[in-house]
Structures are given as structure tokens and as C-alpha cells.
Length: 140
Image 1: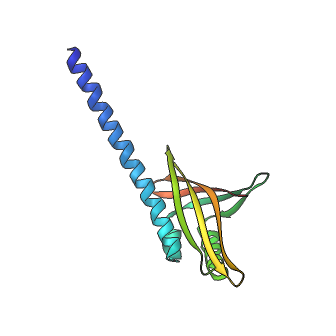
Image 2: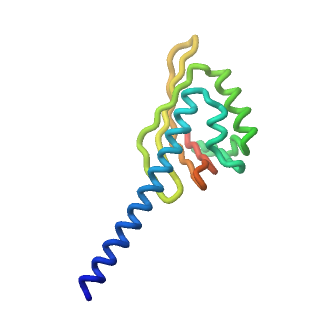
């Protein structure tokens, strides 16, 4: 009987671990899809990846504000951004997943007449129903 209980606990643990791992894989796939869409300038896919109630918070050491709220504001913001900085590229590293949130380091690179530049920020995406519901970017 004791052996049966131990085996049952073990299989429940494996099943739960596999479900959590599958969820994490989906969240990472959504993040990677968003970064690829960004680097490809695919605004339709960028918008498709976010929830209708999407909010993007921008945070510095002493201020926080809502950068974008909703799909249309996001679409308009990305169109303007790509027009003003056409050479921008993004790289993601240092992923961590806690529940429905994926945190990462994002480094953007661009160049203009003054030279080549890069800037890094900590990003956190909250993912619900395979869409990005909220994004927080911490930068200085």
C-alpha cells in the first residue's frame, strides 16, 4: 500500500511538472514570436499577439506611467516608432518565468547619423489566454 501511495504521488508530480513546463514553453514561444515580429516590423502580428485590454507600463527609478493602453494605441505607437527609428533591432536574454509572467532583459540596437546605439531594459510580460495582457518595462 505504501508503495502504491508513493507511486501515485510520483505520477501526480510528473503530470503537474509536465503541465507547468508546457505552459512555460507556450509563454516563451509567445515572447519569441513578439520579438521576431518586432524585428520583422510585422505590426499586424505584434498587435495580434496582445490582448484587447493590453496595457504597457513604463517605469524609471522614480516614475511610472501607462505608455500604451489598448490595441489601437499600440498599433499607432509601433507605426510611429518604426518610422522614427527604422534600424531598431531587439535581442532578448536572461529569461525567468513565474506563474503567468515572463521576465527578460531586452537590448535594443539602432543607428542613425550620430552613430550606433543600444539600450537595455528589464521587461515583464503577463500572458493570459496566449496573449500579452500587460507589459512592464523598467529603464533608466
